[in-house]
Length: 125
Image (cartoon, rainbow, N blue to C red):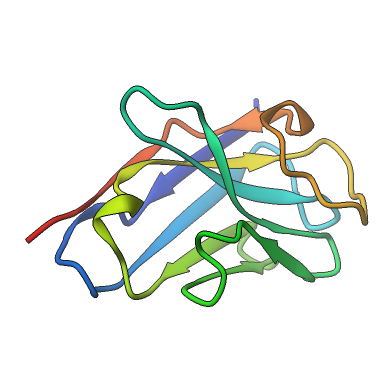
């Protein structure tokens, strides 16, 4: 049974940083594309960052230069380092994994096969 478990969310002041982790179990995803999405109240789930099997990355314009996605295949874990956080970044953040490794950018929720339960990130003073 595949599970993705996110951790690292919380309350942070504007300008602060958080690092989210997504630990996968049940199978290895070292050759698969993975990504982070977020969903704010009343809004649709939106793409944040993606990482290919070869560790190349791509980002939503709204987070480019502030967020960094990375992976540790030995730990079957993906990370999202978030810096210079803004109130607009407040959302539930979800980790996602695709059932294949592709070189094209996977930016839609339908591109992914497995999802975590989400972790809340709140940016507020």
